[in-house]
Length: 132
Image (cartoon, rainbow, N blue to C red; front, side, top):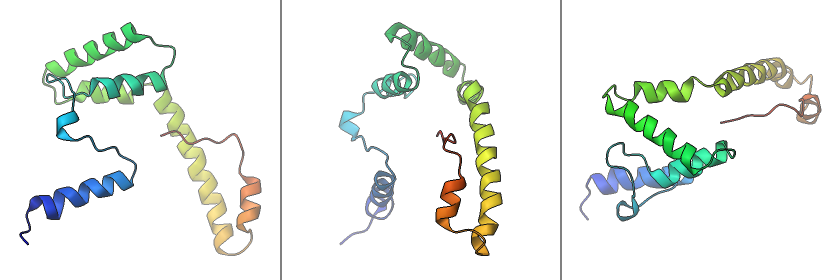
């Protein structure tokens, strides 16, 4: 049996990513815009999940804006800035800090037996959410 890059690298990587929850799209089913490499249907579905108030024309305008930004050959810096400059990033940072302080407060107590897992679950605020 001959071993090559597909059998040693590509296929195991694909299997691992599928186990992590990613979706594999075979090459024959990859319908993407050639100018940006963005999968337009996946992009549209994802934007609608996050922003249900938008309509098709808003999403098309957003995709056109991103296409223009990527067309200036800045290696995606403006696209990255667009993703990381929203208010929701600040909200997530605040939530992450809150969760980190909660972890730092409860972990030592769990480690030395001052509190059990059941006690810790009761102390966690039900309002805390993790957004990814």
